[in-house]
Length: 222
Image (cartoon, rainbow, N blue to C red; front, top):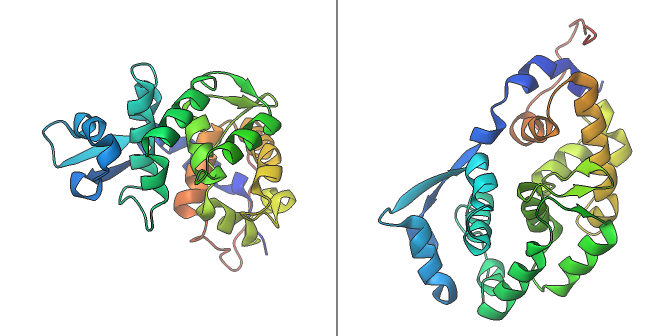
């Protein structure tokens, strides 16, 4: 039997999403092409903590530092392979910076988003959705949200009734379903009086670790 996200309204409403943080170690972030900016982010510290509020504030000061901080928050250990190293090479980093400049607090289209992702090799929706989310961009009138592999796994787990319309989403078609994802989360958030960011954080943190308790009674959320 499927769960309903609305069952957890009280929990979701209390989630301090702006405080959602990760610790980042300087030793994991050795990127020659952007090392001076990375050193500026860390200052004299070997470990820093970044949360969602920090990133939403960072955009008001320096776009390049915002990009680095967003990548650090999203990939604290810098991940495997050379994807981020390649993305931070001077030419691609400049292209990424000029691309994201137009997204801040803007209304965007899925066509624009898709074309911009394709124009920067190594950039995928998982990473781009983090950028547009923290840049407060809106898509078809709805708040943009992070859509990464962890959220996709929760959607496809068949655990939550409200996400049925998104099932079948995968890396290959995620860009096509991204508008529906943002719309679904936004409408659900309004219906239970929470922020869509809080639902996304709920799915990220608890989505794969909750199940129905046999015999429990489900109460409607007012």
